[in-house]
Length: 142
Image (cartoon, rainbow, N blue to C red; front, side, top):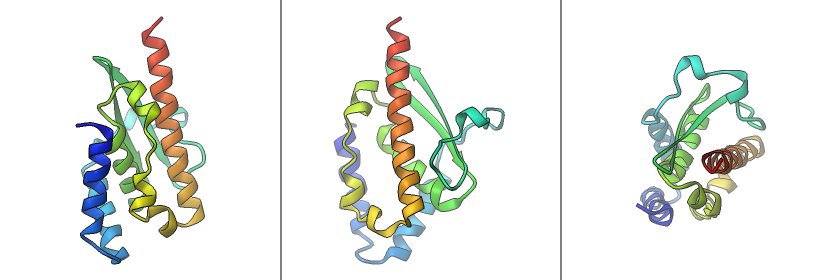
């Protein structure tokens, strides 16, 4: 499935809740429960995403030309946010990830309903995933 198709799927899911942000947050929490969790031994300082108020660990690897992510967080909403971004960007080529505009975040109203620190953390997660994709892409060409 293409990134745009996944984004549309998420927009439709969040639309089911209308203006019920309590329901949308519950959906985020549920997404966090389905996250492929990073192995405990990989939860190192070097894998912490800078700019997040909560602790968020991210592991990225390239397999058959596609980037796969595992992650975890010590906060349930943040875990849901990283799960959402992993769902969109994971299992795609580095180029697709780098070029993804992530416009669905505004379309579902997420940016407007997150605290400034969580919004900054979300941007940091996206930036780190894109940087990892670029790094993996460059390493694979060496």
